[in-house]
Length: 602
Ligand SMILES: Nc1ncnc2c1ncn2[C@@H]1O[C@H](COP(=O)(O)OP(=O)(O)OP(=O)(O)O)[C@@H](O)[C@H]1O
Image (cartoon, rainbow, N blue to C red; front, side, top):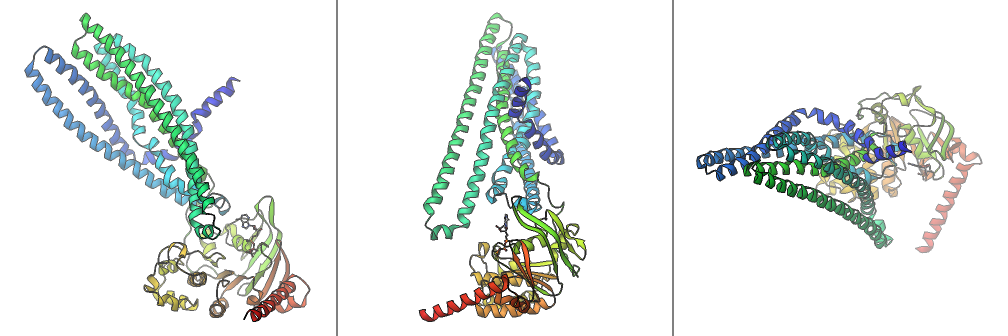
């Protein structure tokens, strides 16, 4: 019972989150020790100035009461020096704090993106893009509560409290003891509000992630939304999220408002009590008016940091929740320590084997069960079969994007798991089913293929992919901006560019996944001609639904429901009853029907 209570309290305080926060941010804080040392020096100067101003108020009041005008004149000089010094210190404090927090956030963003790029594909594909974006647009920006002024306040608070308390003791011990009662009250109030604010902040961060994901999908799918007239549906979904976000913000505002009222009440009550008691001591002649003024000023300096502790604790806890969210990604085991790079002239594989491969994206839906396949190097192998049979998955496994649950893929008898991602990925040039181009120019997209591509190589690859003439017809030719995801190009143009990019990669194995599906017959003929020339020197794996396009392949592998059901050449497979003949015949029949239908339409 007691242990349950204790663990629920510890849970509320979120010790795990705090530990994780310092594990992640500790090295960044330590590596910026020079800036933090500067801030601590400034902190001591600040404490000195605080005491100095309090001393000045008391001393000048006493000098005024006793009519010591010469003393007032020299005190004015002292205070002017203190003010100028104080402003210089404020400038350096602000600058140094911004410098160190911005630097840590900049470095952390670099690190988080690198780690995301190193995540295994199966883990990465399960995280929504909006959530990943939120780490950069929101979460990392929220860590100020741990690395910024809060960290300095954490050191400053006890120091300033001790300094002020010792100084107050010199003036009047009874009044100083009074301040001792306020400290626990301020700390408890701060602690409670901090926990409440933390819990709410966590919900707010999750909500921001949801909103970002939804906006991302809405903008990516805007043409589908328009064509299905579902703008209202998507606006409604956003409206719901956006309004519940507003409610959470309001809950936070109420919490903060209540906290400020409680904090204000504590300081006002303390101020009045100490003022009344002080007035009593002045009337008794125990202390001077000036000492009372010094005391009251110091009391303010003692209370405001303590009540500020709640804000500090609240924002510290918010930062801890943000770090916890980032840690969800950072705690996933990356595939490697360093990012892979393109390897020039990789070894041309002499054998590729899939040995007893069993694989499932999700445990409940098995794609392959003990699959065996030998790819003939230097030849063209076509993978055919119904949609969802697992053809693209074979490409993913081959490039090491996913790991099979059992079995091995061997390249020259070496398991690909033992080959570095740099070498493995440099072995393949992949034209994927979904053509993806990046915003920027045509040239930028082509030069991505590998480092140091010459202008001539780029033009030759574009000619081979039958896209050069189109590029030259554009106003800025190779420097034409193609928009986000290549939105300013047609499907066929995008596909030809991605073929040119694959040609430029100059890898020994070519993976073509429906690479010519978006081309018209004339372009397809020309591109196929170029690809056939390219294939002569390479090992090629082709996935095609239109079986007429792969009839000349050296080997045709027929895949159905994750199993290899037939292997052979077109001629061999057409002689056998089976899936390949059925698919070919049904496609020929469909084509005949289409031609007849077209004739009727014409
Ligand atoms: N990232 C993924 N996560 C979970 N399941 C997936 C994933 N990608 C594919 N699948 C599932 O794996 C199965 C095989 O998909 P795959 O893309 O390999 O088929 P395919 O033969 O290439 O199909 P198509 O010819 O339609 O492209 C499908 O049932 C699909 O739903």
